[in-house]
Image 1 (spheres, helix red, strand yellow):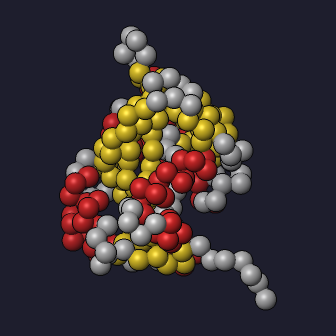
Image 2 (cartoon, helix red, strand yellow):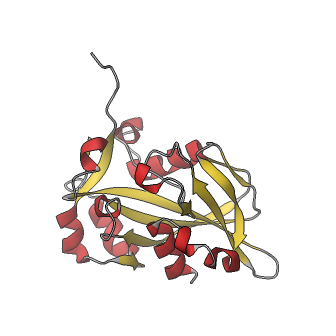
Length: 206
């Protein structure tokens, strides 16, 4: 008998998202969505393998973009290629400007008094990258992409981390070809980006 534990991830009903105002692509109206979606009656933790195939629920995903601005005002973003061992097979080998992942039931169990979303976002960052610089963080938007199979079951919350220096590096081998690239360089790569990164980049930096 298998002893592998099934991961349970935070989801919200797709209908609850639609009631707040469905959109395709990017929305800057974070306050309109996040607080309402994270109320107790909307959140549940369900088996991840089932949720990947069930568009009646949206898995809420923090999506962190690292931005560096030099003394001349030139911006660059942390960019990487998803490796072959990446957990989401539908995104493998795609370029990405976002770090993040699922909020799990274990994040909710970590402490009863804290926000499981915030705990899950910090855990994902700690698992995926090493940050050796100071930064300021802002939540700037939402991503919804119903035009792809992976997008139909996920809803992204975009955070920008403005870093003092470019001292951010991958902790996992699945985060390949990583480093900061200028906006000009990134504009030549949008066709090779995963859809969320392309949507986010064009909305915020295009």
